[in-house]
Image (cartoon, rainbow, N blue to C red; front, side):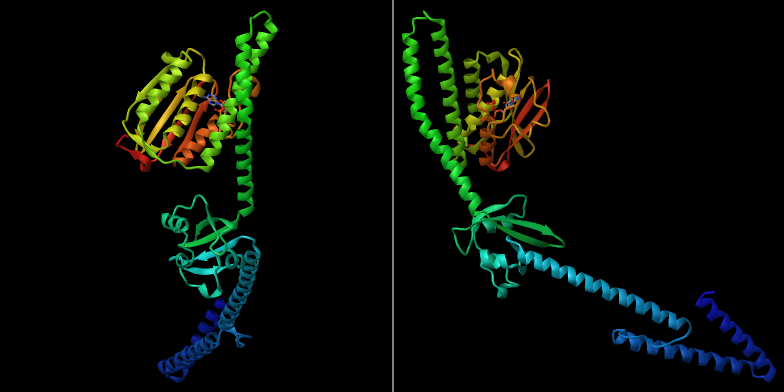
Length: 428
Ligand code: ADP
């Protein structure tokens, strides 16, 4: 039997007893009234005691009580006890989280809804120059690098930005913002000075080696041409060797040129102008068509007159690399289409072929430097493995992206997708 059942049974028994007594003494109503008032008074006293106990936090042992009130006290007491336990656990967890973020080598700053600093770890104090007193200040008042202000204003935090530390400009930081919770943001800044140093050393090394290789290659090429002119074709071995040497020297020359172009794309920004894309594509298709006697293979579709703000020379390299690949990696009689058109807010160049295609697993890799699919099969096709890396870099410099759709044995479509922001109308 539950406590409630007991309580109700007791009440019914009391009422029956009083009823009988009331009938017996002849004051039924009066007796009932007195009994009910006493019961009500008892409940009021209990509520008063309960309110007093809970008002002071329900701390300590609860007042001794029988019946249903004892049960209520016990449940509230248990609830408060488990709440206290949970609070303690949570405080411990927050404490541990704070300690671990304090120990992080990267700077971490919690920003509120108006970019005000709510909390920062020790590294943030060191590399961002923040102080304890800066709590509550807006980060943009303390950290005023234009790139950072633009990044925060833009509100799209997919990528990190690279900026110097406001404390010491020789420290290079990779800053990233992560949005979480209701309007909160976490700013993370990583010291990438060493990484950037190594990257710049790698770029310098490649640029220097490529540059240094140019002179001996030019000399070799010159001598080979002279020797070829002198060759009276008497010895097939000599003729063949000279041809092979010339092919390899040309291949190496291409390699050096591509490496130098990649280095320039990574390090130097050339002045942009409004490039007439229709004119550029017509010229590239004519050149490639004549060169590879493939004019009837190329189908040029110019569906929009729009131009692009960009570097003409770089766009030429990217587009001709895509066209050369389409011609190279598809059967000799198959059609290659080059389509320039508007697609919603963007403009696209699709270079489509009906060639060998690329396996889905290889697609993310073919834009890597020197990556060539099935080297054995491709050996007979000339190439440096740098073409698509150049395309990717040129597009990156134009805020554009490369999309690759391909099916093995059916063909591929390489698309350069340009944003609306670089479309231009006046052609120079
Ligand atoms: P390269 O053509 O000099 O080898 P790229 O960087 O231009 O170097 O291309 C990398 C690889 O991607 C190529 O080796 C080839 O296997 C593959 N590839 C590029 N374009 C195509 C295409 N249109 N069809 C099939 N495979 C392609």
